[in-house]
Length: 575
Image (cartoon, rainbow, N blue to C red; front, side, top):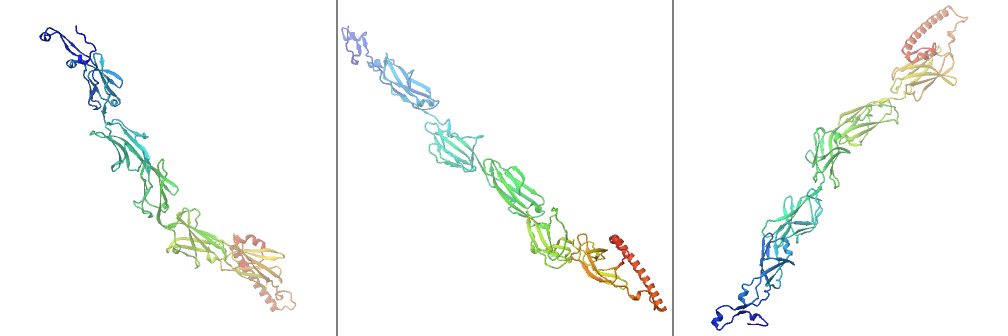
C-alpha cells in the first residue's frame, strides 16, 4: 500500500506497482487526481447588440485539477448572475436584448466537483436602439392640436428629449409657409424664437445611424389682426359724382377670420364675419357723403379701424326735407326793418358766394352768408333783406351761376301809410268838403276813419273804403254849427293797425250869406224872380248831391253802413 501525505498538485499522476517495469506497464494501477477550483472565469461575447436581437455571452474558465489529461475532461458547471440574481444555465447565456439591459451587470462562476471558482468580473451590455419615444418639455398646451400664439410672441424655450444608443442626432426644424430652416440648437435645447404669421410649426427631428429620421412636431396657430384696407370703386378714389355707382370694399387680414363692421357716420351698415366686406350703392346721392368706418374685430385683440371720407359731388338744390322752409314772407317796412331769409341747400361742395346773386324789386346790393348745417353736404344760405319802405316788397330771385335757384316773395304786412295831402274847406251853404290822396295800404285792404272833435273827445263821422293807392278821396259833410272852426282828423287803418300818425285839419264853417235870406222890405219883382231862380237851382243841386251820395253809399255799404245811420242827413261823399 502506498500512502502519500501532504498531497500537492505535483503528486498527481498515475501510480502502479509490480515486479518489473513490464508488469507495471501492463495495466492496473491507480491515478491520483489532485482537485483544484477552476480558474476565474472570463465572460466573452458581443457586448453591443441591437435591441430585440439575441445576446450570447460565454463564461470561459478551465479546470485547475491535475493531471492535465484529467483537466481536459473535467466536468465543469456554470452559474450566471444578472446583477445579484443567480441564474443557473450552461456555459453560454442567451436572451433577447432590451433597453433595460443597459442597467444590468452580468457575471458568472464555475464549479468543479463542488469547488467554486471566483466570480468573473461583471460585464455590461450596451443595447443598441434608435428613437422610439420623443418628448418635448415643457409640454406645450395645445388646442385642437395647435399651439395658439399671437404674432410677435416668443416660442419656447423647449427641450427635445429622445433615448438612443448610440445617441441620436437632434435638430429643430422651423417650418414656414414658404420654407423649412434648421435652427441652431444644442443637445435638443431650442431657445426662444419670435413667431410671425408665416410660422407653421417647429419640428424636433432625430436621426439614428442610417435609419429614417423620426420627429415630434409642434404645430402653430399664429393669430393676428391687421388694420383694414379701404377701396372705393376698386381704388383709393374718395370723390365721385352724384348718380354714379358706389362700391365700398374693406379687406381685413387676420387669423382667425375677423368680424368686419362697416359704419356710415354713426350708423352701422352691417356686420360680417369674413376677410372682405362689400357695400354697394347703385346711384349715389349727396346724402351718401359721409365718413365710412371699417372695423376689424377678433377676440383677444384690440379692434383695428380705418376710415374714408366719401365725397359725393352734387349740384346745389333746395333741401325740401326742411319742413319749415318757406318762400313767402310777410313783413313790415321801415328804415330799420330787415328780413332774414334762411334757404336750406343741399350741395357738395358748398355754394360759393361769388356764384350767388340776388335780383329784387329795388336795385341794391344784397349780401348772403353760406354756413354748414350738420352734414357736410347741407348748408344754409342766410340772406338779410332790408325792407326800408313799401317799394322793397315783391319778388327776390336767387341765382346760382346765373341760373334761377329759388324765388322768395316778401309781402307787405304793415301799418298803412298816413293819408297824403289832406285838405278841407267850407262852401257858402255850410258844407265841409274834405279831400286826400290814398297812400300805401300796408299790404292788405285799408279803410279811412274821419272823426270830428267835440269838446275833448273825437267822434266818428265816416268809415270809408280805400279806392287804391294814389287815388283822390272826396268826402263832404254838413256841419250844424255854421260860423265856427271845426277840427277834423283822418286815419288810415287795416286789420293790423292804423297809421303811425293821423292827419288833422281845422276848417272854418262858413255862415249862410245875408243875400240868401228872405224877408227884405225892399224886394223887387226882379229880386223875387232872382230868389225863385236861386231856390230852384238849390233844389236841383240838392237832388244831384243826394243821388250821388246814394250811389257812393252803395259802393261803401259794407264798411260804413252802421256809421251812416249815425250821420244820416249830414252830407254826401264822392271821389
